[in-house]
Image (tube, rainbow, N blue to C red; front, side):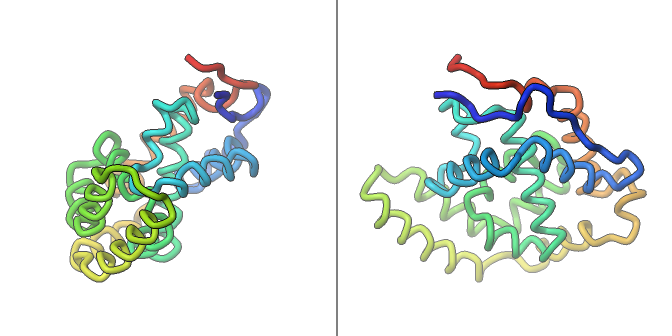
Length: 204
């Protein structure tokens, strides 16, 4: 299978005077034109309890694409409507966000996320371990369980995450949870263009 990836001559239209979160989303727009963004979104929605990271080993996207897509969706959703909106709108990325935070964020951020997301992560883990059955029936059960788990989210740690996202000094504070994460991810994106812009990548 061929990985859909941006054209070789794609250039990042980064505005370095803007906050790092804006630069992350600029990278997302440049490296995920509509057909690629739709392709990755459909991969994620097909089996939301396995997560998007599994698609790297399946040669459906690169590690860099997974990292940027997950980070941009996570930070964008939280900024728009809080961690609760991310959980509600992107259940297929809940497990992926945990993986990104484990490797790229502070221990405190990861701990808060795992606490807030614990009921949802448990549902995802349980369904990922089930033997495959009819997909329509399986997904219906999954969505029902996710909706029930959303009511059990730890409000205190969810508020901590939201406070970090909406902090007035977020853009100037390199230790802010989101700023620290996005700064690291942005550097990876800038340093590894081959993860995002070739004409195509053949199966390895």
